[in-house]
Length: 266
Image 1 (tube, rainbow, N blue to C red):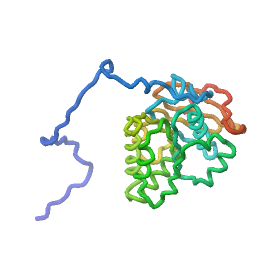
Image 2: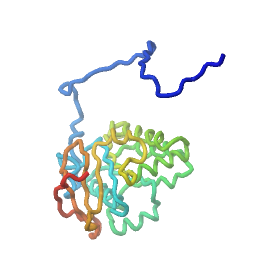
Image 3: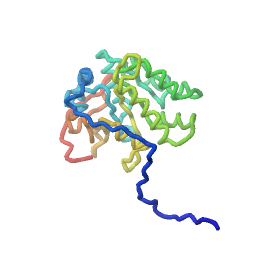
Image 4: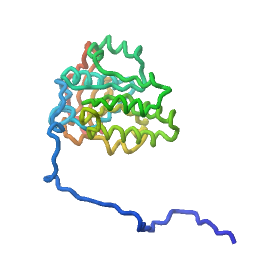
């Protein structure tokens, strides 16, 4: 007699596994100790600082994901933030999954300060294990790292390892988390500024784990008049919740102009 397999909704019955043991601990924040440097903001010295946190700067050990309209200037704006931090003495790295050194020449002509940044062009290592490349670069320890973009880096992992974009994105996020927690040679709680692609409906491309690891979610947009602005829809570190308008008309810096209430826009 052949046993028939029942099809339909899976049973909600809870199966106890007597061989599995999990140790669960609760904590009291009053009993926990942290490195004081975790609460010292990294400041660019520009109007964008109070938008990153209520302390007035980019916070150590955090992850800031930024999305944006096509052509709004995502790479330029975040490179500007990174270069300003670099000029203030922070150790910074730009990881590009899209550009090569020749592409970068045009940026440096308009923004000479970009020329002093440490840059990793992932395309230079197309035939090499991308996980080894990233781990080797980050091992040194950086205060702030810009990744452009997470989707492009994830694609390089898929090309090398196979599997899905989601599983490979999770692999990258695990690496970033290790450096958030200062697992590098300099014991630096690295912050990551991450450019991320979204669908037309605003849905993340890739793993939902990004949402859980994200301290702040920023957006670069055009308004109805074609003006550019930056705002955060989520920020666990507080910060100014308004729209900060900017343009790219000045040389060697983003021209941060003025802010105005967001009027409930998401």
